[in-house]
Length: 381
Image (cartoon, rainbow, N blue to C red; front, side):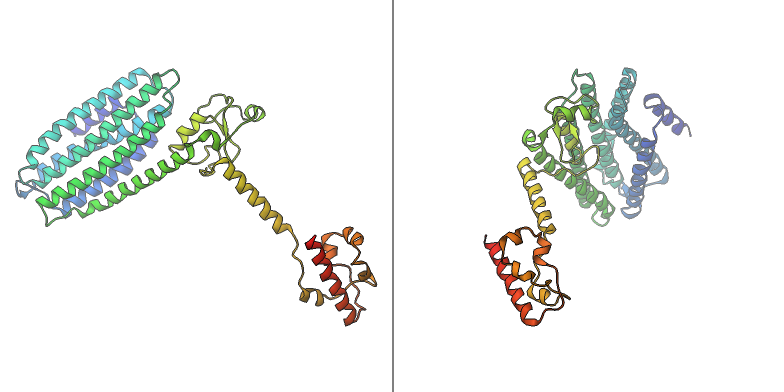
């Protein structure tokens, strides 16, 4: 009870009240961690010095590792979100930095202790060692993100490459997590082959999927930002006045701002920082494809030609003309060979002229031949 009160007091002093988003993320991640821990204890049957772990030692170490994990999850969420909600006070930043330093010291101490004991045929200490290693790695990524955000906050014009740096830090975090998982499985198998930690395959698959998604996103980012000056058209003065401000940075739009295919306008630097995270329009969420401007024009021309072709009325076949319920009015076929008369008719009148039912078969054939010859002459011209 005292331990829980002290942990909560420490959190209130350095972090303060948790936001709804942070609580939600903490619950989701803590649920997954506790489930993995239960599966490890049940399936892998950890030992200390070759013996089964006693209940007291198990509860003690699990309490420590769960509290540390919760602290780091809260820290990771706070560092990721605190700079998006406005400019934090200096006092808040100092307390957050002290909290990160305390967690790093605690991680290093436990890291060293568990490493020494894991060499004595103790799979329990081996698992705790890799958990501390994973938590320590997460803490260092949080510290790096913290300094990147502080530099961006203190710079007069901000840090233009902030989004790119944070993106690469996330990739580094995923790669390090994957390496830690794989090394743990390898070492655990070498020490205790009979009890494989198969439950960790789900975590490995999740990290691999995340990495693949990030690499695909980075590839699209490179394609979009390559020669971005020529890929997207510059906005005109009227369009700049109408748009007003850039929704990404909330600053006034200036000359040289780019207009996306959906007609929304943004600063070039803002687009670069946005595309590293998402390849959609920040306003309407339209997918931005890595087409060059000439390719976009070509696509638009192809679409226009296709629409024109669809609007054309298909020329009727001979069978359709013969089987029509009625035919040309009296003596109108005499004028079909007259190009002046045909020029005054629209396309429907040329292909489907007015019709009279009182025409015999021979007359129908003659009129039909006039129609065919006239159409051939028209197409040849």
